[in-house]
Image 1 (cartoon, chains in turn green, orange):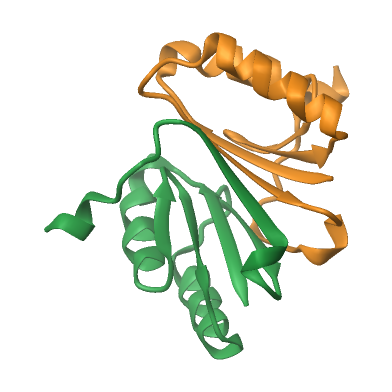
Image 2 (cartoon, rainbow over the protein chains, first blue to last red):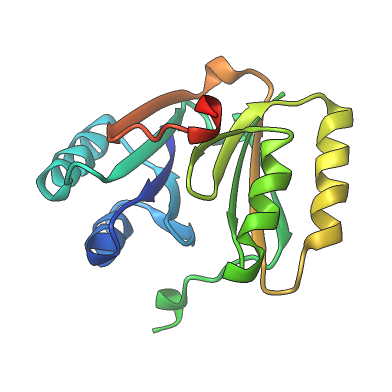
Length: 86
Length: 86
């Protein structure tokens, strides 16, 4: 299942969310991740999110059965995840 | 066509992008918009983005023929667009 995840959280917690999401998905832009997850992986990701979630945080996920149903278009700079080069 | 738009731009320009995207789409989270667009509207939106786009800006759009192909899930706080109440 293709998943897109966007989060908007307090600055104190962005690093926690960044590290967590990186273990399941690919970073494509600040606070934006995408990737393929099984139901089990999604369940784990959500459980881990619940552990760090605080009330003013907002996480939205979009799931699509097939990545090909979503056509992606980039304008401007395509962000590179620098971790790929470390 | 259902469109999801996420942007990551210099702080000096966030307000321009916010105002522009609001005219075409619905704000659902900081720097995240969604909505239904015709091909014509999408063309106009992209043309207007090109007018304000600067090299370090990054805009990613995801298009899906049907909104129902995307299942949305919110964790934490569902952001309310305060403009709806003004």
